[in-house]
Image (spheres, rainbow, N blue to C red):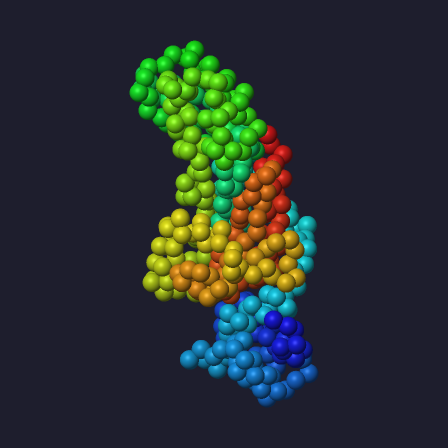
Length: 355
């Protein structure tokens, strides 16, 4: 979309309609704009401008109101061509940093750090926040440990780049001694450490070709490689917070709206796909880095048509996770972008520094 699609006067009025609606949640009338904004325009002129914006599909009129509200098209134009994202100020930085320290007490625990990030984003943005841990396939394997739980069960603990840990309990069909466990652990760590999980899955047989893997514990590990070195289930990678904030928004004053929202949140697989899916998400024009903003019907899932999703990646070594804020389309876009951007930096730094 080009800026020439709207005149400077239309852009100014559209920006005011959106900013006013974000604050008040009430439809915005030409009289309200004339009285509260010194545009040098009469009520009648503003009304004509709003009529043109409505004809072009940028704003619409609720049935029972004389005012106008933004449409998905209006929000998209605003995000791409009107919104100005300022650098995060020191006060907001301090709030985020102090809250992050409060929630993430043990920064050696990646789960605690990711949940803390979700809590901070939720409380600061007053929206629903979602943090998705990185896909483990591209993560670097550091070491493996085994804990004998009983004569027929063993727990395998995989330490993955930057604090991420995966545990799996395996059933044994043979008895093993602690000495055998130590030997297998030593071989696996010597041969596999420093490789990506997908590399291990695809090459473990070749890398252990000179070992006896026909039977025994080492053979069980090789046969179970697709499970041991695979992705964690998507619902284990998802951290959500801020439900109490989003349900207090005026958009959810009807019980069925709250029910639909809760159903969407509880379907973690669908929520994860929503955050990861960015084929149709559109990078915001003036936004730093690679923040994407998906509005209303731009979402591939019809259940998200009443929402805006602001997402950005964070990085841990060679892997990438995503964090997002989900809220009504009537959100303070510039502020949410600042919070998401800064939180991504905090998360990348915290997870990359602790090893």
